[in-house]
Length: 188
Image (cartoon, rainbow, N blue to C red; front, top):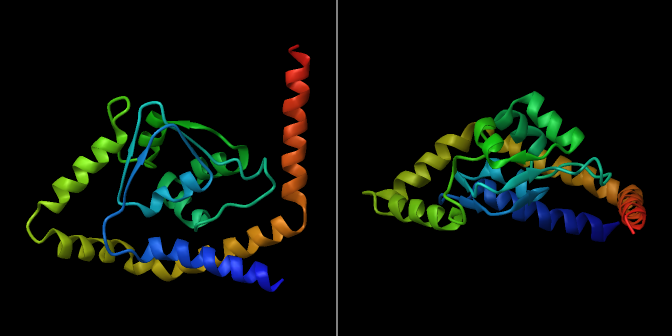
């Protein structure tokens, strides 16, 4: 049991470091953003998606729970209805749907998400007093709900540990894999 608590603590430190980060966080999404690939996005300052990117939260299918304060950030970012739809049904959003919902900031030209994110970072860095201003902006945007984010990260990781420890997640993955195998056998 001690190892699980230690593991959760390490994960909590890593996730909370992004919440407390004082420099801008820009994320480029190419292809699939699944699970934590989605739940980290509301913690970023700018998210650039390739037009072919998609976003999915298969937590329910895998018998696990969301993490990275997503039970707090996703309803704030997407609205409760869309957050519930993604979390509870595994709904997959296209890049355009993610932009309209507020999960991403902009869509790049095809294959250009990383380049656009880098150009934005460079443009931000060229601004007068950029480093100081960005630190102040991040602090202003997060100050009032930082404690709630830390609390949500801790609680969600505890819930995740419980789900992983009771064997349900492993059973769910095995059932999913078996269904895929049966489906592929039917196609032969």
